Image 1 (cartoon, chains in turn yellow, blue):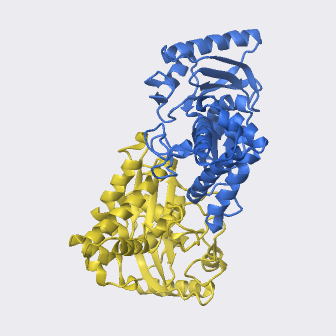
Image 2 (cartoon, rainbow over the protein chains, first blue to last red; image 1 turned 180 degrees about the vertical axis):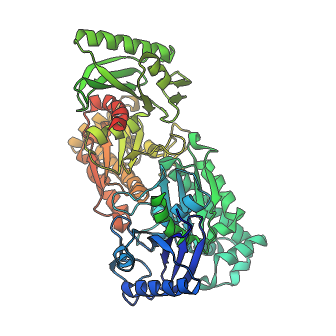
Image 3 (cartoon, rainbow over the protein chains, first blue to last red; image 1 turned 60 degrees about the horizontal axis):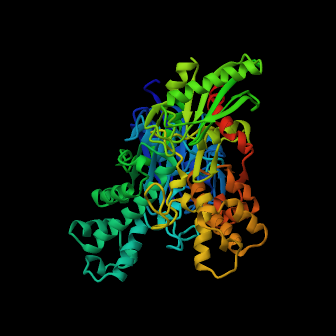
Length: 319
Length: 319
């Protein structure tokens, strides 16, 4: 590859879209953000992206050779290039791959953000060289990308890897998907908040968290309270790790991965989440899998991961 | 391939070993069984297999061109060729691939029986042409083989696909693996018996099954009772389908397969098991997966499946 070779990585979020030119060494050039503005058609976003890219390239005197466009977006389908009824976006059904190719006649590919993160981890992060691992993204919800035999698992319809929606508690917490007991209702920033409030209701320990309304509470506040030894905060992380560890023991029975990589806000809680998760996973593993599967934090910088992941979609196929 | 080309399929069971020469069209030639006799070394079994194969070939005037040897055995590991501490066999740790190659200098490969059944289904059964499906073998326990992107999922260590040991009920029934609540303690011939006895204890319905001791009860008897409208038998199948359907909904969230194929004794109960399994799976599926995933009976004849599956291990790689 020439040093001038880049992949354009585009990560479309509910509010902002992140764009950058990613070289083979995971360095991001001509990086910028812009409002997604999904009340307008998706074509408008792509016009703004390519206009701003031109401006940036002129400004930085770049004449990039763009090998392809990788796009990460909610509900993005690799097989069809479509996003369909994405949560947090007002578009209904749009072919984003076709839209990108109207501007640039190069290979383009789309997938969801968790799948993109898994590919980014394999090419640029802690999963370099791994052929079998699971990437778990912990944000408002829980996303996952599964790598088997060095390939992303898309399944028959492009929608595989929704580990946030395995049911871990029969008749458990109500999920945004309409069902009850989904993993992400327990293991996510929102799940942690729900656990804190459940424990504030069921326990009598005095806690720093007694004074914070639900809408103001963040994972960071629970983390800070845990650092100070707050019993509710500590118990909330332990419970979150228990639910995640049990779910991971099942995931291992399906896939026997080399590692499970945790990415995103909750993963930043470090030992508070990694120690109980590992303990409860090992407690629940079938003996043949014990002490084999690593649980490790992502090696992708949080601010760059989405663009790197989107670009990895193309770099992975060029390799 | 020449019409004289065969793969030697060997299925090693706790009591008997089945052997046959399988051609590209799934026809089995020179087929025979012999006692596994695992109190003697595994090398003794392989000597007897190849001696008997020679005799059979002479008897039927076959001069086969054997392209490879495929072996299915409990705990068989594809990556190492080893079986390690197999249940029901007295061998501790043996390299079966090396033993086969002492007799025949051709490619040889080993995996467990459920994985072999999945490959057999893909090459010779109802999953022909499918790239993403799950094979579930229902016998004394529950085995599974997972196909993703047209390849068997072995995982990092060769032991992926132990769906019988996902935990479906916290603190549930004690499993042979030492843990509690594993899927196979509910969904298997043994699981069905346990359910019958649980219902005989908890319900008051009069039942044909009241007169049968635990050790005498078979799935076939429960099936026969269900055909006569026995309420305990009917409820037992419904409960089994409920547990299986819920587990399959989770499996779909991981893998989004085109189909789930049920093989073995319990699958022979037909509608009694397929109807509730499908119903409870759909009830528990994330909306994007609904009405997409078929649950179908195996297309492999039960008596031939093990040999066909073992042979598919080699045919699959020659294709």
